[in-house]
Amino acid sequence: MTLVDFLDELRKILDTKRKQISDIMLTGGAENYTNYQNLVGQVKSLDYIEQEVKDLLEKRKVIEDE
Image 1 (cartoon, rainbow, N blue to C red):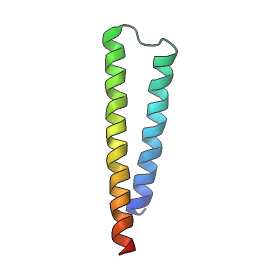
Image 2 (image 1 turned 180 degrees about the horizontal axis):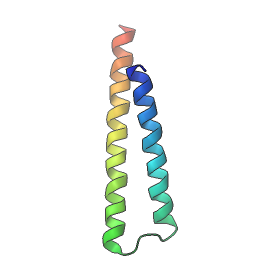
Image 3 (image 1 turned 90 degrees about the vertical axis):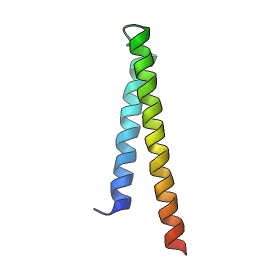
């Protein structure tokens, strides 16, 4: 498995987890406000990680194009 394959697979995992958390939030699955805040924090963390992965892939693309 290449680095690009690994990062693509990681992005899929992040997307799946984000959808699972969003489903919980949208269906009223948060037990209380603290739980809701925790879910929001998880989504923000997943967004941050995904952005870092995108940046790595973009840097790799730029390096390969040179």
